[in-house]
Image 1 (spheres, rainbow, N blue to C red):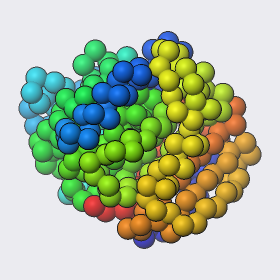
Image 2 (cartoon, rainbow, N blue to C red; image 1 turned 45 degrees about the vertical axis):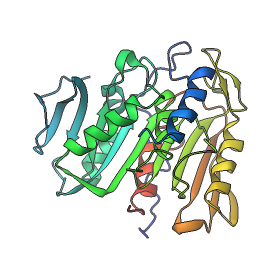
Image 3 (cartoon, rainbow, N blue to C red; image 1 turned 60 degrees about the horizontal axis):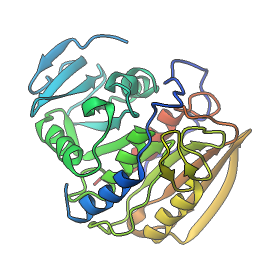
Image 4 (cartoon, rainbow, N blue to C red; image 1 turned 120 degrees about the horizontal axis):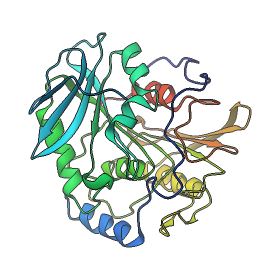
Length: 295
């Protein structure tokens, strides 16, 4: 298991996604139901410097194409191949570049030699009925830079829900997942294996309410903490620890889980619907968590 460090607890403010109260990732009730059915059936700001069917493993930001759809690949100079990779899903009506440039993930990639992959949703909205799970799989099949045993998923808002979907997809392609601002649990997933999960949610989120209920797009979201507790039960965790690593931040850790997994949840008091970069550095903490796991 990788050594933990204090890097990632605090970082100065920087560029972040705007807290769009009408357009940031929410999933309508019928989409959630469709998501469950699809998964249980086993369905699986700078311009890019290159645009090719299969992005090269040269340093820089590239645009890839698969089945007529685009995705970004950022290859840091420090990458040593095959490199670990993070696939990161943007929020509703956002762009893939927002996940690369606006979250701090690019800085993590530069420091740690991690390849970033950011798919672009059709019309800015993820499809939970299976097509975007297949799209993600096709992207990973086309990558030549990544280590498939050290590939992870992250996402913001609707992209976070998409990330949680990946924990239930068959076959599972990710060694661990992380989400910000939208946690879901699918009780009848085809793949029952435990999965390492880290998530972040602000208590003042007005887009996807922390306590659950109607979202800004009139969907119904489950309570964040209760959802993470369900994942802990899914992972068959036997130990629970609560701590306060930073003022206004509560960390809940479910440990001693099956297959060496762990569930971590950061409750950010007064936090809104943004990717955390001030009191906690979500990107740095995600990588510290991800780097412990291989698939």
